[in-house]
Structures are given as C-alpha cells and as structure tokens.
Length: 183
Image (cartoon, rainbow, N blue to C red; front, top):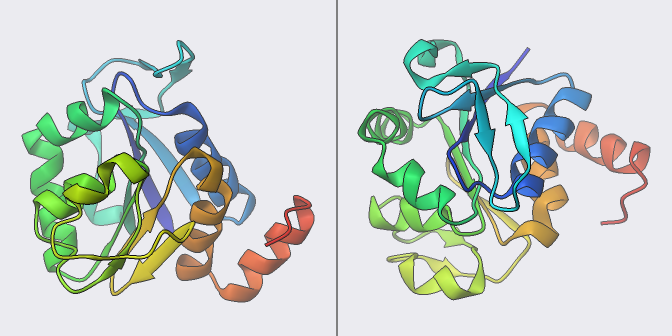
C-alpha cells in the first residue's frame, strides 16, 4: 500500500488538505496528517481545527511515497519556513520520489527550482512564483515526479491525480465515479 504524508501548518487551506486525505484513504493509500509545528492539532485558514496523526519530528520519511503540501495562507509560508520539511522535500525531489502541492504551495517548488521546464499550475496570484515553469492553468498537473494543483476548487482533481500516480488511472476513474465526480 502506498503511503503519503500531508503536511499541516497553521493557516492551511482546509478543503485542499482534507480532500487529499479523504480521497487517498478511499483509494487504499495510507494518508498521514503531519503537524509541522509539533502540535497535536492544526488550525486552518478558516478556523477549522483538525487533529493530526503525528508530528514532523516523528515521521519516518523513508516509509513515505509522496509528500503533499496543501496551500492556504499563512499555511504555505509556515511550511516553507520549516527547514526540516524543506530538507526532506529536497531529498524526495532529488531522488525522483513524488512531491505534490496545491494552490499557493506550488510557489515553494518554484522557489526551490523544481519547476524549471515542467508543466505546473497554482493559484493565479502565485503564478509569478512558479520560476521556470510552463504555467498551464489546468486543475492539476503531473510532470516528472512533481504534481501541482490550482486551488481549492480543483482539490478533487488534485487528489485524483495523486491516486492516479500512486495506484492507477483506472483506480482514479473508479473513485471519481464512486464520489459522483464528473471529470
């Protein structure tokens, strides 16, 4: 079974984070909700508090197949400020393992040089931060080992793209049908 870490920082976008967790779990992917700041709960950008599965300090990164960064402000800024998370993100990217980000969070990939020559998408106001990317405006893009999503309204597309890459296109299509999502 594939396993993903979804990283939560104060001010995360609730729908982007929880849609990924929900869709992954429905598809049989173990989705671990990780508190970046070490607290047992994370508060989203709209005041919704979510109980975490673990903390950044306790994550076994070698057991993960993908790192997922939800957007939201100031959540994205808090994710990028975590040197421990950025170190692991670089390690994943450089070794060809999956990294994924949605909404404002793809700017982190742009800042770290992951998007040069790749198709990518993000929240429109953050597109200038996608350094070197071919910006597509699509709901979700996968190019190489990088997945990006446009924003909250594209969270299902983004989650299904993760399922497609970690399980199969057929599994993503079946899941879309089960949740009555028309692609």
